[in-house]
Length: 313
Image 1 (cartoon, rainbow, N blue to C red):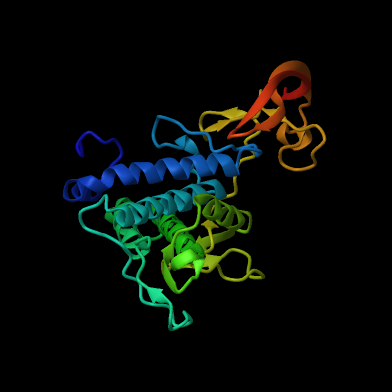
Image 2 (tube, rainbow, N blue to C red):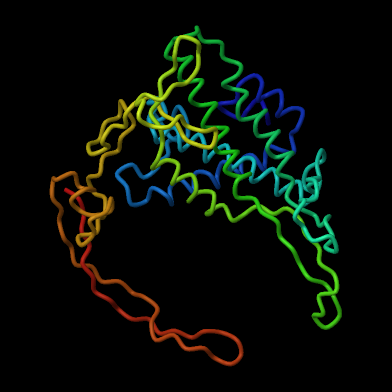
């Protein structure tokens, strides 16, 4: 299996042989990351389109842009999320429930030790596996490849830190007739949508950086604060993604549906890049007049609805 998986570096292939049962969860994590990316960017010119060519996100990844920063972060977050959950579920041989220390502010009478998501193991394995491809390369210091390597490693770490930032304590009461005589607490990951929303905010506030002669990242604009390890960073401005351009991986926005009344990124003015749009009247069949039936289902009628759809020229 490990020799047949495309795109693995030598180090990743070695980890694949050593931890073959981890490959399924890694694939699940990658899929969750892609789906979250497509959800977060569904109303923008670049809608996180995927490709079967050089990488899952295509040639867009060759540009050191905000979009590349986000995809690295959400992919790394997807892996740590999946590995951590699979540890808790007992699906992996080398890990189990979380061994995180008891929080200092937890009431003394509450029990710490429910089977929590193993974020510590997920973080370490994600770091070893996801970063392996970057750490194995040895580009010349100061080269374009060296700078991109620094950017990718930073954004991978930002994705993992997003998981830590949003993981919280979950507690449950136990007792006869709901008396709550006993409370057990554990560490629990949030729904991945929470991670996606958090990283999308980091994307919107991403910092443009440059790599200095010492190999350190500096902020391009001195009036801005230096980015933290949780912030996303990029080296190059994004293309506008208005027109189809195979060289940079842009599919363009021709044929995309837009919202005529919106002033946001999904609005026809921004989405269609000033080219205008065509309006079509379509007839849809939707569920309507739904009623709850005892017991226990909802019965709906099917109604025809006519609506206008606006498509970018």
